[in-house]
Image 1 (cartoon, rainbow, N blue to C red):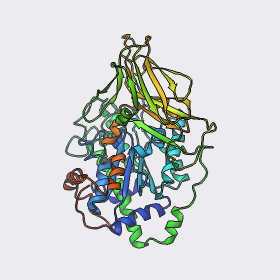
Image 2: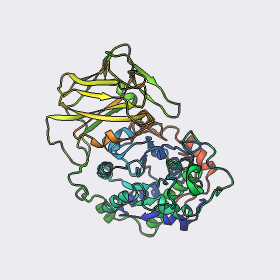
Image 3: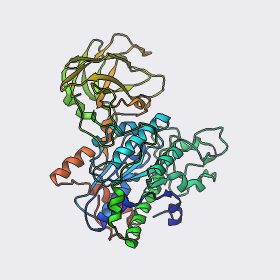
Length: 500
């Protein structure tokens, strides 16, 4: 570890009810494999780290599990989607991770900025807590530093930290906070770096953290959007690892007992926000899987990749007015998810269209039900006033059908300043609850990126059934080789080894 244990302990705001974590880590101590997942936004994807998928906080923490308790059966999932909010993950959880998880770490405080987003975060928590193995759900609250040239001081209350803390307290979740971990360092103006190397030497076109007055944040942050630099990712990983080590110490002092199983199986309390139950049904066709829904398309519609290799931006694209793309989806009922909640109108479901909005090039398009189901047509505009390109989601209510066909048509009118007509469709989500928060999301690229983690949720589920875990070890071995200090157990762990 590069941070002393005393400082790392400051980052653990609360341990919550330990029963679920004790069950998960007791499996490791017995030599059994576990399924662990880290869900979040661009920080979890690895933005700011020199090697996303290797040196980001999530990959380091997951590598520590396998380095400390090597097992070929571990399923270790890092699923980060830039700009993603909890509402999306509450609907599409199974797309990103297997449902038989033992441990789940959440990182959404920076992105869940609106009050409605907090409702989505609660629905995600409730859904995860009700998963079959009753996993330990850890609230890892990343602190986005303020970027305000006129701010003379660093505000303690900023962004969504305290709102996440309330939910962690209500559901008695372990609560890790980056703000608490490094608050002391944030009070010291420092134009120089703490370490010998410059952790900000790989800026990716974002506003520099050096633009923030006083140079207070350059010791940990890459840019003004709150992405940790290499050192910041390491420190966050050490906080997570320190919490895991504390669970092992607790088990060594107090072995697992039947009361732990009883506590882990207790019913959830009522929702913190009235009627805010998790979706009862949902099915996600986002990313490459959406190609399976196509039943007809004009030649102008093409499946294209527009982004860089590390940030895949696939989608169906057309720039020709009048061209259409027809998708067929089952709206009779998606695979049931736990957590309760049902639509008041059982005759319809919400069909959410994921598409690209940008400040240029984009046109208008229509979505309408053409066969097997009925709905009010939905007219959408791909232009917005923000100076960026964002994934957006809008919903319509469709009647239930085993084969509901929806046609997307590029319209002749446009709001684009360049008078272009581009339309980009990224996917569909079918749910019994319309995700009203998603239209305010600022997801920044195609959700096919979600499968770029250590091991994707879909792959993990399939490989678990097959009894196989592929070469995850390679990435973890790179971490373990350069991070032996962080891979040494402190109480209850086995000797480090392996990768993963």
